[in-house]
Amino acid sequence: MKIMSSIKINGYRGLWFDLQQRSAYGSKYSGGLGTYTAKHHPLAVYSEKAQKTFFVYGGTTKADQRHLLLMVSYYDHQTGLVPKPITVFDKEGVDDPHDNPSINIDEKGYIWVFVSGRGNVRPGFKYKSLKPYRIDLFEKISEEEFTYCQPWWINGSGFFHFFTKYQDGEPRYTDDGKTIFTDQRELFWNTSSLDGRTWTKEQKLVGMGGHYQMSHQQNGRLITAFNWHPQGNVDARTNLYFLQTRDLGQTWQTADGSEIAIPLENPQCPALVKDYQNEGRLVYLKDIQFDLAGNPILLHITSRHYEAGPEGNPRIWTIAHWKDNQWNFREITTSTHNYDMGSLYIEPDGTWRLIAPTEVGPQEHGTGGEIALWISQDEGQTWKKEKQITDNSPTNHGYVRRPVNAHPDFYAFWANGNPDEMSESHLFFTNKTGDNVWSLPYYMEEEDEFVAPKLLD
Image (tube, rainbow, N blue to C red; front, side):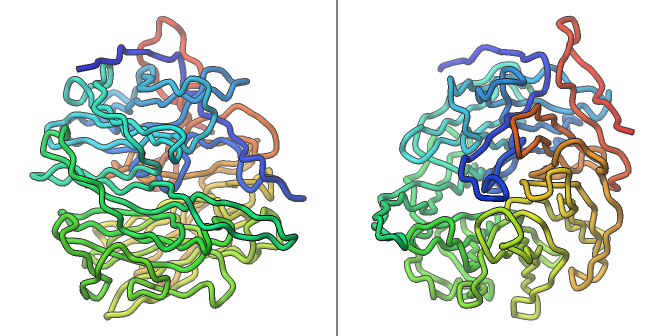
């Protein structure tokens, strides 16, 4: 058993990153990306027994550095305080938030942190807390190949893990005749024993040339939605697909319950929800949910172009809702960037709630913007902007994350940063109504073991 010693950091400092794929209107995506990507999930989990929301993020050592630290911490709902965050893993020079972590809690209260790798270049890691509901010591369980980790705990069974592996792709050709060899992102899954130490052999779910996915679970039923990268080209991502399993992957079905054989290899397969390629639209996945009847809801943005700037407009926040044995599509609002990312909430009283950077931010064409709260009372058919949660911010906010079992006092979690130039990146959370926003302390004094997050004006 390898134990990683507790390494406390004196503050909550998010990672700043720039993909360095720039056009006239800025980077393809950049800024404060501590809660990136949309394909890492969950990033936070509320435990009723512990009365704490545990969360992870990509941190860094200093404001002027891009040294990735994989961080874990919690918000104590009884005291209203946070401790110094803990480094679960130091990426030792890596500055890429694709290596960010995901988190979940098993039924005995142990905290699990899955550290994403990057293709076959950097491995992924699984860590388990040494004690239930404690973050001071972690045991390394495994080192293996996985990216975009999405671990779901199933009571009485163990983990079901959706993840991505990079496979050698077919060559594709640019307009000027250049040959590009791409690593195709293919979707896999496997399951664990009840103690999380033994895992089944990984199985391929989808391999049609490349994919991104988002997933969720409810009472052991697992659902996933994904797009398609023609010829492995992520900048051509399009189409929307859906699969589900009720028996931990022994069989898979489409939304109408029809069984389907995996791995999927044909882009025109029965799992296709909408052929966006035929409409000339790109697809950027944001969130996936269940309505009160257990029907799936797919939140995504469609766009005309992969680069930042007005050429991609309109960028449309869209809902695909399975109801009455068909997919129903509704538009919520528009956005200024493909990588604006928010979260969808379906509440017991029937309210649908979207918290997302839908409003123009100080860096207009950059990733993120100002955070707004949108409400629907008719299952997504019509939407109203209830309020703007952030306003007059110095830098854009982005990648708003929904905790599992979200507590009303820690309902959404995100980071900010300047997408146009390197900046500090702070971490924030808001309550259910969006009336209050708190920032986690960027610096903590050496003698401060616990502090109260700052309530913003």
